[in-house]
Image (cartoon, rainbow, N blue to C red; front, top):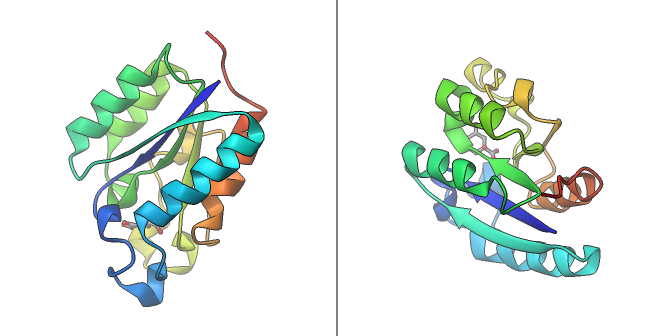
Length: 145
Ligand code: DQA
């Protein structure tokens, strides 16, 4: 089984981006720890990042029939994108929503997620470890096609 780990806007800047909020871990570091954890769980992973909403939509569409589920950190599109919500609802793949920071402890505009209603669950506030928690949770819920 295979899992798509999809990262949205500005997450390519992790490590240097607001380290007080997001920590010093880079996206490459996260990819490495995810690859190690996936191997231990017997999963394959595809790791993708884009700053473009349409590219994220395309990746979600393309995941159907290829991946058994998606770990998604949609970055700021979490709080704005009806299109991402619709895409997830359309492909009917299990999605675990991840955020490094605790979005509920931050500005009010970060409290609402368009991803949450179409995700099987949300993990936030645990930094990079959240990706591992998501992989673990998703491994029990993967769709096999
Ligand atoms: C984030 C939280 C979002 O509110 C923010 O726009 C991000 C990162 C997180 O991982 O904590 O870009 O998704």
